Image (cartoon, rainbow, N blue to C red):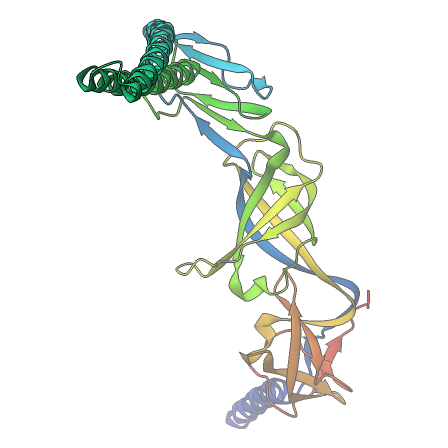
Length: 387
């Protein structure tokens, strides 16, 4: 009985030892199943960016003078033509100023006419005095008149000449006053025109800040106008990815208000200055088939197709160790065993995979992770179909 118990324990110990040995062997030497890198045709290299809907031409307009709003002809959502009346403020006070300036022109014209008449009279008197002086001087030479009479005639001519010069100066001054009156009238007319607010271009009214009867202050924004033909998306992308982008690249756009739809566009402009704090670059994207009901400031997702790789072996970033400046190390399978390989990577896809440029010839790069990886370990590669 005692011998049977001892034999049973011996069998149990041997069985446990065999099981433990098998477990150790499996853990250390049994082949591990790993996933291999895919080689894919026509791989798009895409760059993701977030942005908002903006407009290249957006204008905030208002009156240059203050006044009470007496007419409003446009409101939110209206389309207006260039030159169309948007609003008018009470013009009566300015109309009175313009009328006063107009009467000032009439007064100046009358004053000029008087000055010209006086000047003409002074010229006639001077001519008469000049002839009289010439006769006196001739008679003086003959001894017919006295020296005193000749000198008196000469003085009279000089006085008439001075009166003529004064009259001519008055004419010049009257003409200047007339020009000033005309300029004042033109100025008051310009100010009167500023009591009407007109659209500077064919526009869509985005907002209106005042209602009829309110007071519009000088320089205050009354309407916000945009040119619907200049809508575009201002997007921000990482500086590290901005070098791939060029004007004309095709873009896929998703608007926050229409998440289930995708629209096409192109890169129209690339900003020449980066954000120094966020390290982002600005790009401007024109949408080619977006709905007409744009909303300024709406969030938009932008995916720019920067390039297309004809054929590429792709490795996820998580499978690359020590990745610095396009170089890193990966696990690879060579003749059924694990080896470490240094690789050079190129483009990065939007889902976080890198194009392997060199270092993968003759081996299969491993894309999965396992805690028991070591060089020389036997592995089996899951066959991944090439696409």
